[in-house]
Amino acid sequence: MGERYLLRGNEVIAEAAIRAGCQCYFAYPITPQGELVEHMARHMPRLGRTFIQAESEVAAISMVYGAAAAGVRTMTSSSSPGISLKQEGISYIAGSNLPAVIVNVVRGGPGLGNIAPSQCDYFQAVKGGGHGDYHMIVLGPSTVPEAGELTMLAFELADRYRTPVMILADGLLGQMMEPVELPESLELSKLPQKPWAATGAKGRDPNIILSFDLSPENLKRMNLELQAKYAEIRKNEVRWEEMDTADADIVVVAYGSIARIAKTVIRMARAEGIRLGLFRPITLWPYPYEPLRDLADRVHTILTVEMSAGQMWEDVRLAVAERAASPFYGEMGGVVPTPNGILSEVKKYAR
Amino acid sequence: MPVDTARMTKVFSRPQSLTEAHFTYCPGCHHGLITRIIGQTIDELGIAERTIGIAPVGCAVFAYLWYRCDALQVAHGRASAVATGLKRARPDRIVFSYQGDGDFASIGTAESIHAANRGENITVIFVNNQIYGMTGGEMAPTTLVSQRTTTTPEGRDPATTGYPIRFSELLAQLDAPVYITRQALYDTRRIMDCTKAIKKAFQNQVDGKGYSLVEILSTCPTNWHMSPLQANEHVATTVTKVFPLGDLVNKGA
Image 1 (cartoon, rainbow over the protein chains, first blue to last red):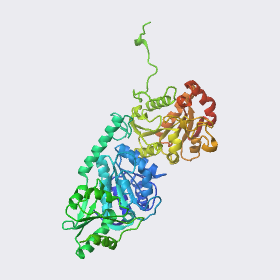
Image 2: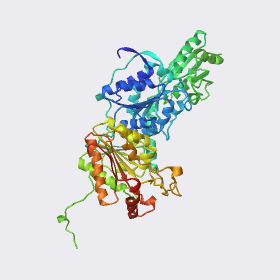
Image 3: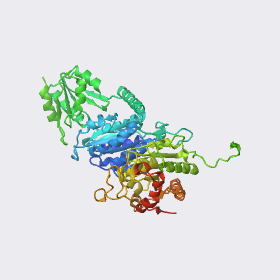
Image 4: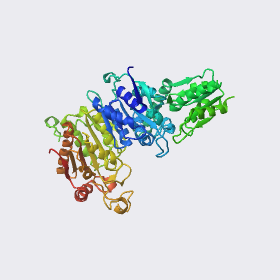
């Protein structure tokens, strides 16, 4: 840790990726993550690293596949419509056990939607937007500094598990500026060795990278290995934050920018004598079901607040399983819930 | 009469860069020839230990089994983009993609054009047999006018399906590529020419010259409903009229 900078979320993600040792970055411009692409265009070439403005999102994620197969740290970024186009490549990356980082600075949808902040891509991110039985690790940063920390973590987890990792941000986080201490740069020579990579079969048998097997028995085995990896990730990597839950009667569940707004709501509610707490998933996959279930035994209401029609709400209800009331409040289309709006929802359930 | 093997000299053998795995191609198909020529080229250039091959979706989907080098099997049409990522990550390795007409000239149109336009220092082998062999003989972007396929049962009608696309000519309009050539394999002379072209396309990459593409007019006796000899004849007399052989770009020749 060192100097403090005033940076946008998009720039912090880009700079953290560089400091995490990202050697190849490929993307197609889209709002509201343009600053991320532009930061990489400015800085990657002067470090002797690869920046390509790809002809499409499909091409960008395919270039990521190639660079990941070659054993270097690699990333792409986009926003909702572009992430839809990347789903083919993400499925192949997952099926081929390749490490890669994908950033989605989510905007309003469906279709072209708009360029305002949203959380409407939650299902696509955590349930597997592409074809096949796969998962990505999905990290949901809530502040600009955390966006940097989780970007560093994303590369580490991608390499450790040889899996795609998504940073699920939103337009608010991407555009917002905050003071941030940037992480120290990692030394490329000290990054994990990748003996499985396609680097030329010198003094060893060929390495073959694929997601393909015509034999149902073999493909079943490949799938079982993937599922075993996902079980490992579920066991080791669940992350969440709790605030004021110890004495809470009501808990708001929120992630990303909304969790940050919810922290304000907790202070407002407590000033009025409502014992409100916050449960903030940091890993959206694997989802923190168990700690949320434990919490549901201690409170009467768990209110989910999201910028969507209630996508994460499904995971909350899976966790709560009727141990507590689990209502929902959401906004769509780029409308951001205000602290007062959330507080008045909370008051409906205060006893 | 007993054969005295001790007195025999071996004059022809499988290239070192090919594995012992059997090809999955139909009898009479030219894919096997092309695979062999690539193996021979890798041997001659001595680059097996630093070559990475990219297998497409289509009849060559198993290409990763046949070369004794590192290999990837990638999404349909994306081989040139994957090759871009791989080559940029490891500029000192030799990267080639092997792509059919559906892969390279239809679903991968954007990836193919832009890899060429960036002048990626890669070698692309583009196999044009005017049909979708693996999926059962459907129309390709290169299917000839009037040619019957399972999706043009009355013959390809330009009024509704357009004309065979001369993709190499399209790419030859770009400034970056250093070598674009169309070759065939229907007789010995063409096999020798094609072998030289493939070697040049790899040598260019070894020399750091840039993007090289060898389009090869191949046969599909199975889906053309021809014997292998008829298929060779068809390439020589008919296909080459639509897809003329020869170099389209040859910089620094």
